[in-house]
Length: 459
Image (cartoon, rainbow, N blue to C red; front, side, top):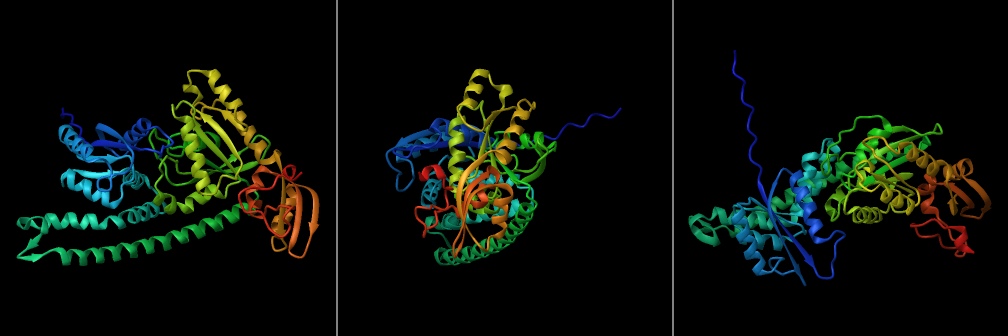
């Protein structure tokens, strides 16, 4: 009888110590304590073990070390006490702050900020070539201004007996270090340029694909929401598919599109997108432009909110701000309060839904409330009309035909530059006409994109 082979032991996880800072007059969407709790979840998602944390409220950022000198000494002592391998700041650190803090922490401790941590998680979770390209670009753009720190660190190590000035055989490292730094910076700039070119091809491909979908007249519905709110589970429930789901932050990064049958016999294309989070790194927003355009080009957004989360309102606000940042806040929204099966107070769920128009209470996991949700989606897409006034150039014949076919035309006018249509459009078409919003009180000036004109407001 053969002996059972012992299971391989997992390597111990790196130990992480967390630091949060609240700056006077710069409140975040989450409180500092809640933001620290979220940072701990991010660290766990990245495979780190959190062994301690601290925070500080300051009037202004310290020029050298971000936090005060006394707090720096406290952090150094706590890192030694907890045997931490990594220190993670909840705030984004400037390259100068990072360099000074690394000097204080020593070469054995890795220093990260929230942005670097999220980039690392994205790098672990990117499955497709597009996702990998987007993350790689974001990482290089984050690292580029921090190259000076990296090379001065290497120079100190290479210096050996030469002390801080760094010398080998009596030759100082300062000149060669700067030369190598410039070479390295040039190389990274080339890689950034190459990645942007490749992603531009991805973007062009997505644009062609979106144009093809629009010609089919099947509305596009994008799932948005805070990370881990249950978007992928909802996609699976609505489309009867098996998209990867995990109870962790940023489980899926790459957009997935599935067909969904609505109660009235209509079809819709449902797209799952990357989850949002407070303090979403600007590098990621820029790098994921092609993916985020799936949101800004949608006919309807389904905003999934974890109603059981203690910071559900703050998370909702964070998503709304991100939608505004990517210029998608004009698109009709259905708000879905998910995880009703875990809700202790059912009355609270009902009150929440009643307080917000076009909202539903569901459990994507059990399927509760799904019939109400699909009926609501169909209503907003095909039945709920909104009054609009648009001015369409004659070259936009397709949109003129679209308005006549699916909208309700109340008045039709023509001039030398195009046609002016007063009428009503279903929610799913509003985004396509957004650019052509028109204000009759300013006949020579088109309305700035950002809101279709409501005829009632003209009275």
